[in-house]
Amino acid sequence: MDRNMYSRPRERYSQSRERHTQSTEEYARSIERRFGPHFKRDILSLEQLEPSTYNKLIDELKDYLKPKVKKISASQLRNVYSVVKKCKNPKDLMLVRPKLAYVAGRAENNETKELVFLLEELIKHVDDNTKLKNLQSFFEAIIAYHKYFGGGK
Image 1: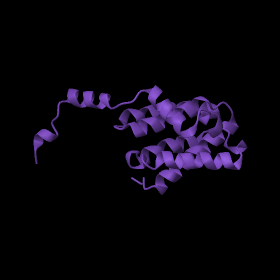
Image 2: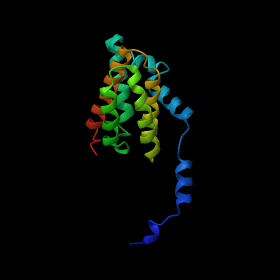
Image 3: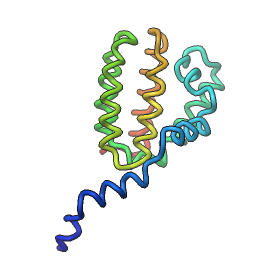
Image 4: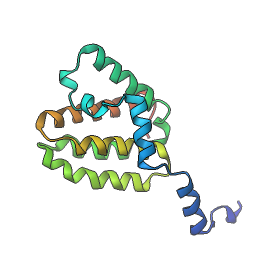
């Protein structure tokens, strides 16, 4: 086995990683293209959505996750989800954002970073228990479709 393959200088690795990282503006545009300009409002008000709007949102989520599923770690998703699920009020979500930052920081792909960006944007807008419950339901759907599309590792 070629030892040089694993002994790449840290500086070069870091530079190549930076080159492929999208900006938060690019993540925002990508998410808005996929879910629409009112994605935060729609996701955080799932219970009030008309069935057709809800179904469209879930279909968009499925289309969004399907190509990303192999690049997003199920264990990292479940770890963050377990913290979100335990939240009893919006103030409890303050502890989730640093965990998301850790997941994004460890990620070596834009798919994970974009999903983290989506979740963090939603968390920032949770200001009552209804929105918290809707965020938990949406996150549960992410976990379910991640597993459905084969993201079990």
